[in-house]
Image (cartoon, rainbow, N blue to C red):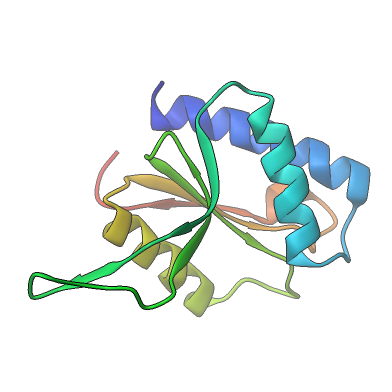
Length: 126
C-alpha cells in the first residue's frame, strides 16, 4: 500500500475520532482512539515506537518516540493544542528523517473541523 493510500485511511479514521469526541481532550485520548480505529484497517500499526538517533555510527537512545507509525512508512504525530506551530512541524519532519519515512500527518484534534487540524508533511519528494 502506498503512502497516499495510507493517508486516506488515516484521514478517515481521524475524522471519525474527531466527530465522536470533538475538541478539548488530551492528546493521549485522541492518540488511543486513533490507534484503535487504525487497528481496524488491517494495516501494521505501532504506537509509541522508540526512535533512536544515529550519530557518527553510534546508536543513541535519547527518548524519541513516534506516536503512531503505519507499515513502517507513514508517521502520525498527535497534538491537542491551541495552534500548530513551527516546532511541531520540525518535530514530525525530524521523525520522518530519522525513521527514513517519506510522508506523515501532524494532527491537531483541538480544532472545530479536523480538516483544519491536519498537516501533511513530506520528507523529500513523493
